[in-house]
Image 1: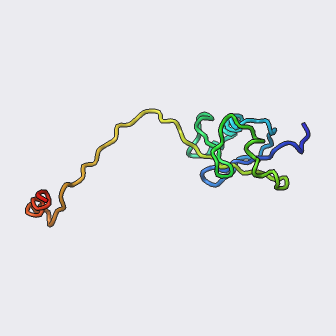
Image 2: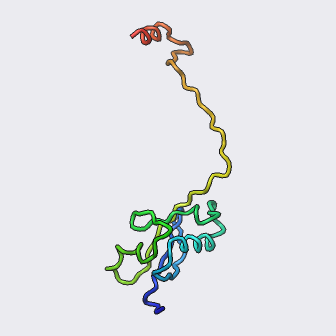
Image 3: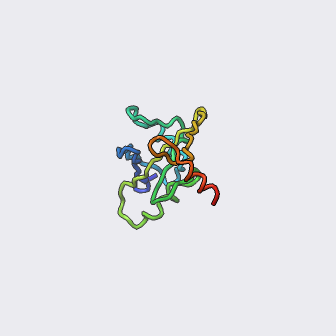
Length: 127
C-alpha cells in the first residue's frame, strides 16, 4: 500500500499528553486502534486501561464505534491537507466489585441553637 494512503493518528489522553502519531491503513477498524493504544499505553499514568473495552475514542465530537474503519471516521477531514488527526481518549475502567453505598441521613427539620422548633414543625405539617 502506498504511504500516501496511510492515515496518521495520535491519541490525546486525559492529562493532555499524546500517544503516537501512528500510521494506519484506511481499512483499519476502531477496535484495532484501541488494541494498539492499550499495548502502547504509557506505564507512568495513574489510570491504565486493562482492555480495549475500557477505552472510548472520540473524533470530531463523536464516539467511534468498534466496527467502523479509519476511512469512515475521518470523513470530515477529507478536504484538509495531509496532517495528523488527533483522537481523544476516554478511559472508563470496568468496575471490579460493587461497593455498598453509605446512605447519608438528611435532617428533617432546621435547627436553631441546637434545638428543634417544634411549633414551626407542627404548623408546617398541618398545612
